[in-house]
Length: 389
Ligand SMILES: Cc1cc2nc3c(=O)[nH]c(=O)nc-3n(C[C@H](O)[C@H](O)[C@H](O)COP(=O)(O)OP(=O)(O)OC[C@H]3O[C@@H](n4cnc5c(N)ncnc54)[C@H](O)[C@@H]3O)c2cc1C
Image (cartoon, rainbow, N blue to C red; front, top):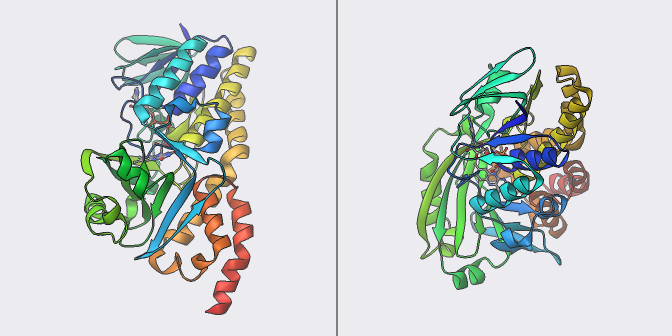
């Protein structure tokens, strides 16, 4: 009998397992990939708050990030550089290995190539089917955007609010990366780039992640065509990517509409993408998923102290998480609607030429300020741009 079995060895599940094991609970993580989270499709940008709050080692970084580049209409762009590091880019397989090692050092067991197929919640425990049948007092669903456990808890959830991303990993020699991107992550907006989202280029050591994301419900044509056009025809990106070679293509879902309606039930909690913890406007997910893992671990530990794994005790998790990140996710949906609806006209409609406004966009993309603070600070520029019209 395990205390806790965690389905999914991504940042959410692994941070949660490390914390639970450090409380002295016996934890098993099951991940269906060859190594935990191996090759998880992702741009790989960790914001500075993620690196700091979770004490992530600098050795996992493929490139430090000190600024951003933003292109918002054909040919129009700006860059923002900070006088401190604002994040770093990683390869997800390396991050997975690192977080798994931390969890194991804390006392958790991590098994790969183990797919959770079924759960049965019984009176005193949960029966879980993977390559063998296992028994556990609690289950944590950290199994990503297409979560089996989320679907058990939310069988009627509308999938149209999910995001869909396509991404190339492209090899490039390090000198060209230094020269063309330096220590900046680049974001590209406009209806020609994505039907309802944005494109990104995140440089690593000897390759770049180049992707396009959009709300699934707005994708009417093949999103890969947008990606190909971006790489070959975008006036800025195509030049910067000259000579780069595609080494991998991925397509993946990402939740973009805020917290999943039900993230706990008797003996079960959901974390990370399974719980909808991705910023609807920036797509940042790793920080929020680790945050949910940490918060869930505290609540689960409390449930073990009380020997009560019922909904009432576990409901504290949802309350705590809403307090920590609920407003970000809610305002993120608002920002998503405002900026990305007909983005070619709105993004860049005069307002972006202001330096202070550009800095606020940088802060938003890098998770440096809360969305409410950004909105309050942006209001005067927005009003000014309306009056000018
Ligand atoms: C293309 C793309 C680019 C992105 N770029 C960024 C970025 O640059 N920065 C950022 O912060 N966020 C980014 N995100 C979001 C980020 O990747 C996710 O929010 C984050 O990985 C969520 O972590 P998680 O642990 O909840 O889930 P995941 O990382 O998805 O981990 C879930 C794990 O569970 C495993 N699994 C699934 N089902 C089962 C099962 N039944 N049994 C066992 N194991 C299972 C999966 O194989 C996986 O390893 C991006 C997402 C996409 C799709």
